[in-house]
Length: 536
Ligand SMILES: Nc1nc2c(c(=O)[nH]1)N[C@H]1C(S)=C(S)[C@@H](COP(=O)(O)O)O[C@H]1N2
Ligand SMILES: [Mo]
Picture 1: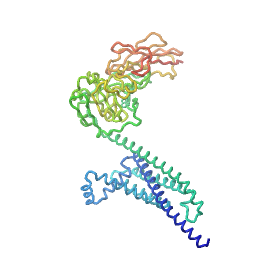
Picture 2: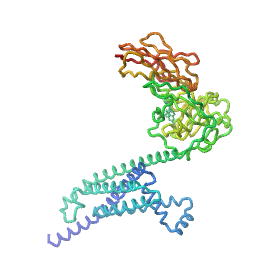
Picture 3: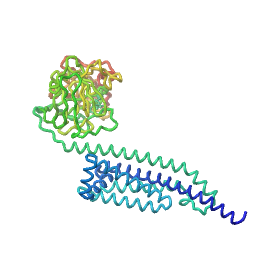
Picture 4: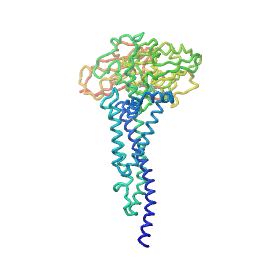
């Protein structure tokens, strides 16, 4: 082979290599650019969701673009795209971004520095847009900064997985060593790229969840609950003070929470609508303002979960404000035979309440306030049901948006499908809250105190037994209403040694809590709460 032949062949091969290389550069650069852009947006959305959803670079840059658009172009856009002008703008921003991302990605395959500089420019634009918004805070720059940094890291990591040595293999490199790493790294490169994409989508999704929650918090903060036309009366004397015994009203932040929602649904009061339909003469649809404009009543009601074991904490007492459910149902005109009210939460959870119970004159309400505040998000903001006397799973739908008059035959709600009882009035129960079994007690007077509940029936008597001795009548706090729990105390003359304390309540129907233990499934626990204490 002459030296000329060698050169010709080499050039031919090199020419083919160069073409392949150029294709790969474009392909890899596109992946590089798109994945980095996705990570930038995902991370920026996540940080914005935590800091302030309005500081999302998509919004701040978009808004700045609108502000900078000349008037004639704006009116052209509105004339041409009408209602869709914002969508067109966002689509425009997105495609520009994608295009620039691809260009930067391709540039970084050759020279990483070019990509980094381009990214920095993006970051600066994002920060500038965030900080020049009229109501901006310095922290609004964080999403753009975090997005740019995350994209930078992604770019470097991905770029390295294309060619771990030093940049793209140069044309001068011996062929054997040049091809191998390129081929082998392809899998690594694509896997890393896919991982980046998944992380970006996850971050963005989480950011949007946070952002929704943030907006629901804002919505809740802006709500003001009108004074009830029928206020609750003062709960005078309903509270006994004994250390270890909780307050008569359970503070919202200590109120038990039970629901099937991993993350509490974030519903904006402005968006909330309730539809009452099914077996009714007239469907009703109302929004939050219309609900607040109705006569509101304020009532003290103790909620209890059917899953509460004997001695458990899944019970809480609050002062609620809400619109009577019965009035609404009467306006709708419930058909005879519609024996079940199916209420549905925005997340699809369903509850079935006997129509007769909701209509029998008790204070069944669509509640909007809890202990003097708009309903907390976790407790059903903006609106939940509360029906005195029924366990939560058959009455207390949080985030309620739909009420359908139906029959027990026609539909099984969420927990009924899972075997829990169709009808579940709260069982009469009593609990010892103090002393706690772990307390060091001294001989002498020791108050034994707790709560007892028999919602919508009322507590008649509470008795305590020490070491299986005779039942002794405890002192009862004043009755607030028959819908609330009642505190009680028994002043025990403790002697040293180990003692067994137990409690039982008798309700106004004359029923005394049975000693037989039943598990919560399928319609609520029974049995006496019992503790063992040691007295020095
Ligand atoms: N949307 C919705 N509402 C719901 C539930 C639920 O899972 N989802 N759980 C119910 C149950 S079982 C109970 S005991 C009460 C608890 O109300 P709380 O979390 O405000 O104490 O809510 C009821 N309302
Ligand atoms: Mo419950």
